[in-house]
Amino acid sequence: GSEANSYDSDQATTLGALEFSLLYDQDNSNLQCTIIRAKGLKPMDSNGLADPYVKLHLLPGASKSNKLRTKTLRNTRNPVWNETLQYHGITEEDMQRKTLRISVCDEDKFGHNEFIGETRFSLKKLKANQRKNFNICLERVI
Image 1 (cartoon, rainbow, N blue to C red):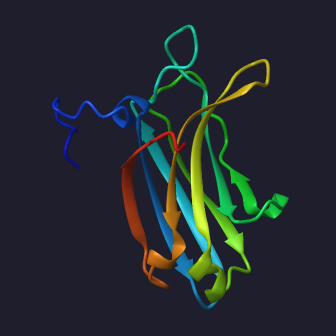
Image 2 (cartoon, helix red, strand yellow; image 1 turned 90 degrees about the vertical axis):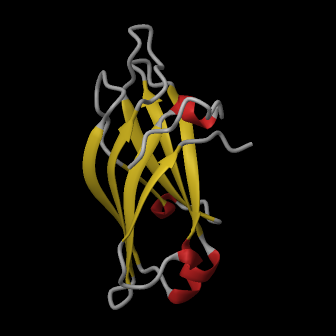
């Protein structure tokens, strides 16, 4: 991947970048989200680091089964999770109308989890049985 150039003063670059891949296993109605790593996350703690984790949320929908999360990695702004989170029972119809929201958050020791940034991906853009890799800048969606 190419480095963001210095002319890019877009606020998104300051939040950090996230690398992940998505695969829709049509035969098993399975959506696999592999959270690979993040780079240059915005420092959230007083020590200039963060304790990041990634949270997945299928929209629309508010049930617990719509939410998945990775483990928390301590004191890093460049976490490598290499963790695959799976949604089961995802139908063709779900793929047509749902959006995957991927948020990167910082877990602090008082349990106040702070939102760093997120990205959203409309699942209808995903071809069945074909892994798609992403490397995106996090943003704060208003």
